[in-house]
Length: 131
Image (cartoon, rainbow, N blue to C red; front, top):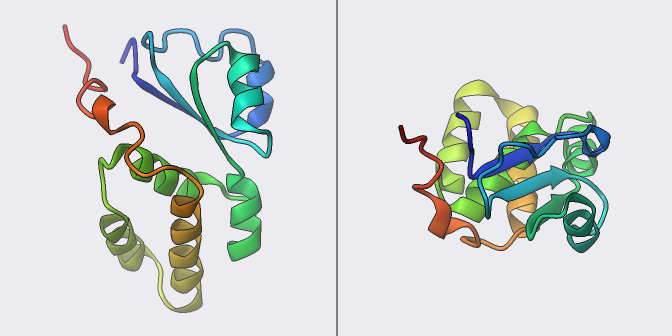
């Protein structure tokens, strides 16, 4: 995909890498795993639509491990409404059991609460590459 409409940055240290947002479609949206304020990140990146989510902190809280991917997916799906939280939970139920499952379900619920639902919904079809 040459010009994605969305970018998920899993590690805020990547913000220091020159060109990290190169290729993002004009008006593209960025979700960053960061404890910084979204406004600060927006100014730092020179982008209008940046959402910060402390995904690593959330993962540490619920899972006891610094694995931000599930929290970031939950937030992304909440922002775009491309997939419901129920669908994400269904996938997790196929992968995990018992206490690990319960902690992951709590994690996705908490991550979803931290972002505005449907904020990026209008972009849902523009992520598809066209030629």
